[in-house]
Length: 202
Image 1: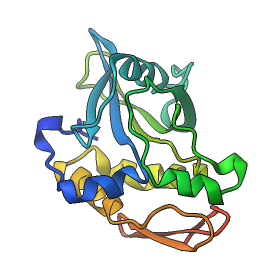
Image 2: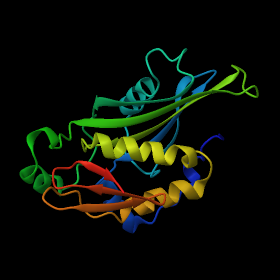
Image 3: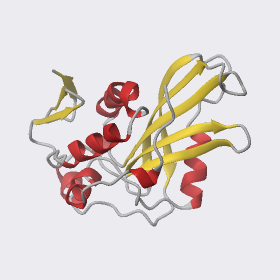
Image 4: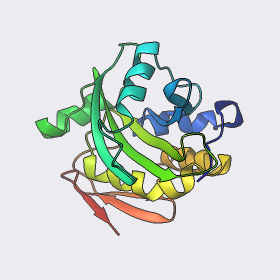
């Protein structure tokens, strides 16, 4: 697995940004730096608004509490308070009015769906690589985003075009709205969100 691309390599069509933010706030890549510790390597889209406190919280929570024995892949969910600067999509008001209470959006908190990988790598000073991909969103779709994390991890850290394709594809998705069956496609996989916001992988 190679390091992810830097932010200045990503150019995302602005026409897709609103559609992307209906589902995800951003995608973060956090890696372990020998001098800095857990550090934010990249965010996608690159112009996303994250405060220093947001970044600090994301980096702190991006690795499992006790990762010394976590060789391989570990997946989990985090919840962190926002700094208040983040913009909540206007369509979430309609979403909340139609949704069960436990699935409603609270824009004062991010939900982060984390996929952490720790593998041996003799080319690195510490002898192994530690890296996490985090899907940051306001939507409590645990099954959906956990499966998307799994689907993208094998590809997302390898090349710029993968990130661009993922962001653009999510930008084309319809609004997340209870009461309708939503078909989603990403990385050649089909996902289906039911009227009750349950996930079915086709």
